[in-house]
Image (cartoon, rainbow, N blue to C red; front, side, top):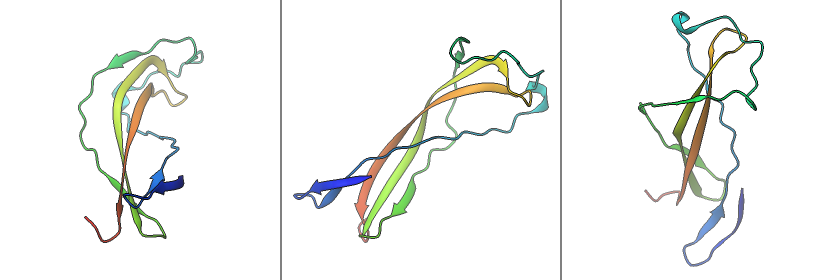
Length: 107
């Protein structure tokens, strides 16, 4: 989403709305019977520690000559002691997006 701009720098004002879909390959050893009573409003997850493996910038070009860079950064991971309908553990994540912009032709 873009509106107005900063006339001194020549950059438009950018804003974003996002939805993160996170997937994982779950080893059979972690699978259990599906939980029939999972309720994220009531069940309390455990925060787990993690080590980022890779964080990459995604680059998009606009029709009017700008590059928009977005980097999703995982900040927290929570695990419920419940399992989805495939028997996989249920996780919740918090992801922040870092955004930058540039002019096409500039580094």
